[in-house]
Amino acid sequence: MKPELPPLNALRAFEAAARLESVSGAARELHVTHGAVSRQIRVLEEALGQPLFLRQGRGLGLTRAGQQLRDGSGDAFGRLRDVWAQLQREDPQAPFVLGCPGSLLARWVIPRMGKLQADLPDLKLHLSAQEEPFNPSLAGLGAALMLARPPFPTGWQVHVLAPERIGPVLSPRYAGSARLRGQDASALRSEPLLHTASRPQAWPEWAQASGLPAETLRYGQGFEHLYYLLEAAVSGLGVAIAPAQLVADDLAAGRLIAPWGFRQTSATWMLAAPSRADDRRLGALVAWLRRELEEP
Image (cartoon, rainbow, N blue to C red):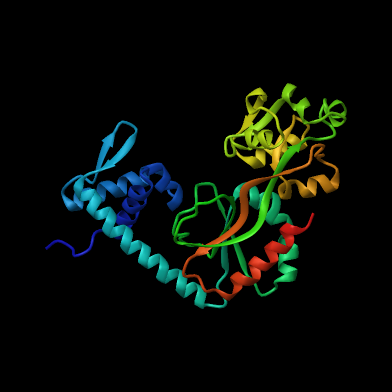
């Protein structure tokens, strides 16, 4: 007699791979190896007696059975996540899980954790670094702090915190620092600019707002994440582009200077929560974040 339910560990691995359209992505989400996800999918296919995925070069496609199982398992896991999140929210002792991109976490949130704990002593915060795009359901999170621009997923409860402002920054130790400080922004057209793959639009957006043709900019060393970009700027390796709040502490300490100021973009600092979130701690966190982000 065949079991009434599929192997649940295998189903969880399949659901993540089907939703993300990537075995590697599922492995990262589930904190297991690529091979472990592949083995669980094979277990599920053997139990069903037919394939669920079509291997298409380096990509994945779903068979008809895979599509049906993806839809059913996605709905089931989605409901389970919602119920679990609701139960956690109803427990006043449960930590409030805040998701945040690694660069924002390292350069803005963590340096302010002492102040946050002093101002909101009843908020037990658990920080979760997120390098992949946030799941539309914000599964497992009480809220997500990010820099983003609309449109936002319909399932999000969005709290706008502050406008984003970006500008060029460099270290006083940078070889060209003294020369650049006395010139207008057009001087940057002769500099090999530091840039990041996570924000490729930053320099062109700033250039357009500053009246400079974006195509005249020259790019130097690139970095995968904003955090690495700003560490390179602090080390005197060149001129970087950064959101004002992420370099505020470095500017105050003199580790960086911003000779040309900052310009507002179409993005905002925002806190997103699941649409049905009614956690009373959310309002206090929103108010605290707004106050901190408004400070110069």
